[in-house]
Length: 322
Image (cartoon, rainbow, N blue to C red):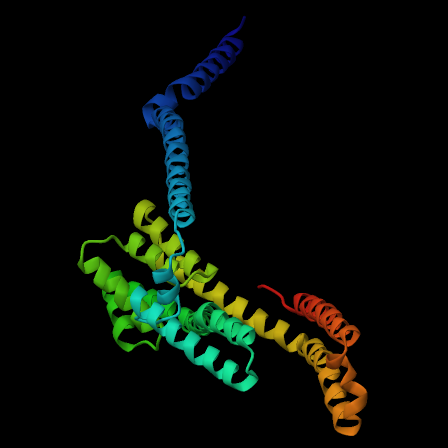
């Protein structure tokens, strides 16, 4: 081999040795190998930790939901709770006294009007048991409707207060002073319960007992979960407020669309009474056979039963829950 060939071979050998040295030695000198090992170590260690944190948070949320459901199912609807849901401050004895007074007045009025002791006794029973319960139901529905109407505004106040750095308890105090009824009184009871040492979640569960609607249940669950497992409370409440407003908007649309069916049902239900009144005014002897003869009384009872079934069926068909 001549000198030029020897120089060329030596150059190729040196170039090959330099390339191998660069490939195998350079990562150690530049720190790339150490960085890769560190990334692999961190990924191996962090991934189980992240999964464990996610599983732990999911378990906390599930546990909170189970606790809320268990406490809600264990609630017994007592007479005091029915009175509280109606927004009244009566005691049990006051309720019994008022029921007895209504029964005596109603029974005496029917007995004096008809002169029938059985009718008077039935009126006493209806006035003592039926009218007070109907009054509580009517007041409860009206109070719940007013509460649902103002609840999104109260949630917006809490959301803005939390974003501004105001504690949740202070937001509740603002609502208890400045909101409309019955929101004001309900939040005042929550604030008073916290003053006595009751936790916020427990106080909101008591609110749900007094106002048994899904909106309050959602609100209580959101507050309870955020208090136990953490998270962005303002974002959760903002989403809840948006959902409640959308539900209210959907309920308004359904009411507008079903108004024609409700009007038709009302006309159909009132038509027999209108026809009977006009017939009595024009031919009283003709229609009086319905309550003078046994067959007519039987026909009235059967007609009332079938008409009641039809009215309740139409009501069920045109009422929608959102």
